[in-house]
Length: 289
Ligand code: PDD
Image (cartoon, rainbow, N blue to C red; front, side, top):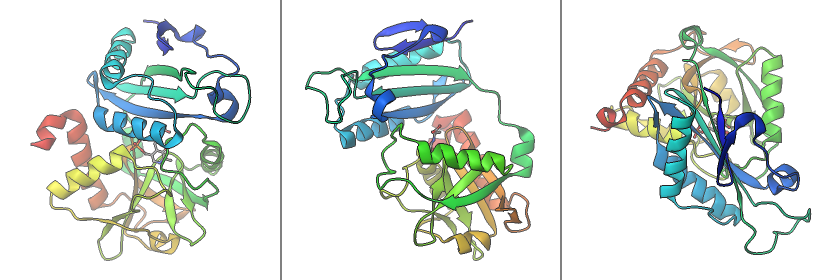
């Protein structure tokens, strides 16, 4: 089955899918995106992704190009046309095509809407069993990291630095020495005293959908989550560390800058939280009951 993309109202072969060179997403990174997981043909946390998409558009004053029924319809059509059971769906909305000039284009310029979908293989069992490495880098991003903007240059550079160091992720450290988040994931630790900590929501991090679901699942399993900033120092001396994201789910981090976190193996709290999340992915309704 050949891949199909959605571009501004049309389903087109993925290999021919294109936007204009004067799309503001291309020229100014003037746009937002969402990545959602597809499991068993269903989109995980679909409405939460649309909530965040609409919020990002609102914060950037990009008109909402279509309502939720249309988003749901196109998403389902993309899953069907691409024959996906387990995979990812990507949606991107930009401020549209206009002659290059920094101010917003004239009212009525239609936003550009693009969707792609792809199959993904199951996460490597070895990666889950052994955990992954993370490095730390300075957080050099702008002051609105809560907006899921396509402007991802610091994240791209950080992830590349992680890869070159043989690591899966880079945790970003703010000016006060506190961990903000990973380049494409949220950051969590289990402290020396057993607190499960992730940074509270603010303009400094993206409000992860996986983060929110895991928090809800943990709390219904009587595992307390503490939302506060934690320092790099605290992370280095933590018992466990892990990340959450749509693409990584809940993944143990076993080294930070080459030094072991805890005993350098995935910890029991991370394993428990991962199990809760994987059960939710497999059957969201049962997990909510
Ligand atoms: N990234 N923080 C950042 C900076 C992110 O880019 C992401 C998601 C997350 C986790 O959010 P969520 O749980 O909603 O996936 C946190 C996506 C997967 C990406 O850019 O590919």
